[in-house]
Image (cartoon, rainbow, N blue to C red):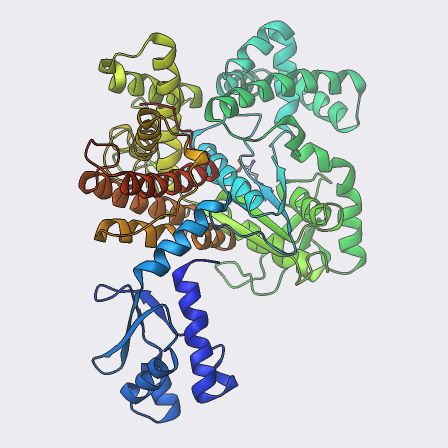
Length: 575
Ligand code: ARG
């Protein structure tokens, strides 16, 4: 681990143990980046109180113990420790990092089995803009956790079952299989649903047909199941079109839709009832997890079997959590789902704990996804008020990106490639760079901007370093260093590069991809200042300087490329 903050934490803890005894070995030294030095440690302030000593005295004792430290430690003010690392240490650590293909990112030991439940659009409706965010954030988490050495199991919990499928199948028969398939593949799921719904509400005979069809579907009638498959396969082909456009790693093997749990639902309910975890209430089977109450203070039920014997969303999630713990053997389950479902998941987790299906050793986390807003601050919609079709939205991003790079003189094929990467990169990065649970304003102009913390800026910064290597006719991957730090900006860039591994680990632990965005943005900005002030290939730059600066470029490139790849943001070769 080369992250200076971690290295310093360990050193100061060692010093604390030496001076004050081993019981202080795991006190948090509170090391933070500082404007007066590289870092500041504030531990002496709190420790002073605990030891009944003046903080300054405590700070001096710690500083005295840090004599073999690769830098300088000064006590300032009432007892702050100002820590400045030696240039040679920074250069050495950065050089080591350049030899490391993982650029300092550790491997989780032992690896965890992590289920990531994400995307999960509903087949009876169009995949809408809200699903875009869970798809993008979930995919970044799956990539990151995998890179950290974990076994990641993607679960696409499609909404592919329920009573609407009776009317959907009957409508499919009415318009003919081929026409239906064409419509669904084109992403007209909402129109399809609305047409079915209209008949269901207006025509008695259709309503009866739809109801009979539901019963047939539930009893496993082969012909009905075949029609359900026709419907679902066409719908999934549309979802796959979106995943392919976005470069999302979900495949058909990751589909674990609601229907998959059908055979388990009866036993799920029976087992919960037999344990006494679920009880009958007004004809329905319910779990009343402690601590959940209605607005008038009555116990709040999680209904797992309706009074008509039907199962719903909660039944499926109870079966799913048991399956993920027992069969998939997960250590951790991430539910990347809209924040508006927070209560549902709290109740599912609490109920599963009651049943002993979610042991303390398994962590279930609802990764809340904030709402996507329009520029007007309301739920994102078209001007006419209906929700926006996802393929249209993504195509618009690509069109706008095409316009933005139109003047740059690329041939059509190259231009199309770049525009695709920039358009999708912009949409994805915009989603990832704000914390996942905050509401977020969808704004093409901002996300496609080439300055600021945007996808295109990050892509441009990366492509620019690649072009340095092209011009210099050097293979970036073959650069071995060493890195040296002579100028202030070189030092700042190298120091910051040392923190990459720690940031990635934090993203994995805290499910906060926006931290990685902020970090990479800082790297790109530092690089940009470095490149302005420190010529690399220019005539007159001596061979030694050129070599170590190229090495610094190579490490920066590796960090940016790896980081953007973990986020799922593509980088075009040139821009
Ligand atoms: N299909 C659901 C929706 O669109 C999301 C499913 C999330 N996953 C789960 N295990 N409930 O709201």
